[in-house]
Image 1 (cartoon, rainbow, N blue to C red):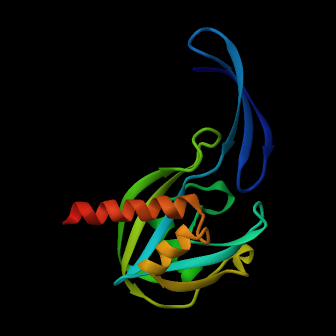
Image 2 (cartoon, rainbow, N blue to C red):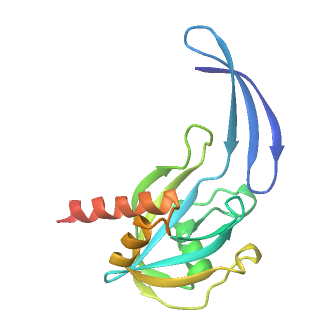
Image 3 (cartoon, rainbow, N blue to C red):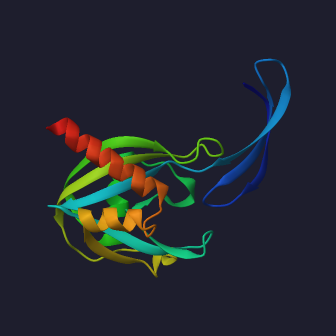
Length: 178
């Protein structure tokens, strides 16, 4: 598939929407709408058998959702993934990690977005005060056992695709360490 032209349809500080005229391998023409967002970092804070999650209102869903701390840099900036992960962890939870290890890569929605995410495992945690952004003022944070996380996932209380995929990466990571 080849892009013949591209035009920006919409942009703000968090994303850009573009529409590309494309030519497929068979020569036929088409159009592709793409949401460009900066890459994000997702952090799995792990203390023994407990996971630290944050809950916030997700406007597009009209629901509050539990998920792992995650985010992008402001104004679509690109930061080194580990720096972004440490910043998101500190901002959203107040935690700092003595060990922050990258365990995987996720594509958010590769059929419509260029955004990718790096997953980090945070251990040797120290507690502090969150430094939340204005848009995160209603955020809550709590520790959950793995059993609680899995029960909440099965019950549809945790539905964030990135958090569920990150948990699968954690399980695979732990399996490969043994």
